[in-house]
Image 1 (tube, helix red, strand yellow):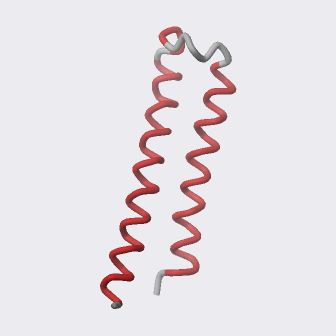
Image 2 (cartoon, helix red, strand yellow):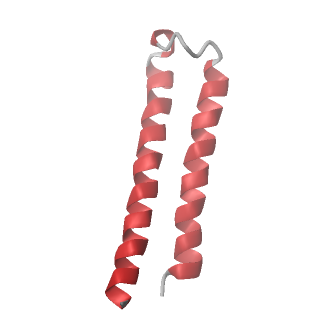
Image 3 (cartoon, one colour):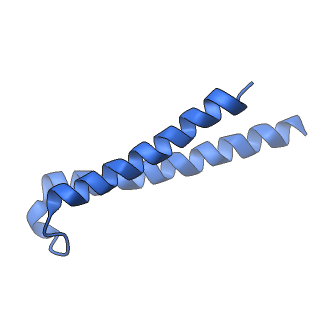
Amino acid sequence: MKDMRADIIASFESHARGHIDKHRMNVEVYLTNPVGVGEHPDIMEAIEKEVEEIARYDDMIEMMKKYFHE
């Protein structure tokens, strides 16, 4: 049972890191090619939303480490 617990925690963290990577890449696109992103006329607002998502998933990882790692 303990191995399954560790596997679930690792899977959760991997899932969250994948979301972080996705949102980081979106910010990189905005930073390097803001003209090419026509559906987001307010680049700063779009970056802010992406960074909020990064913070959300980063917080989840930290909470898992704080409360569920042994």
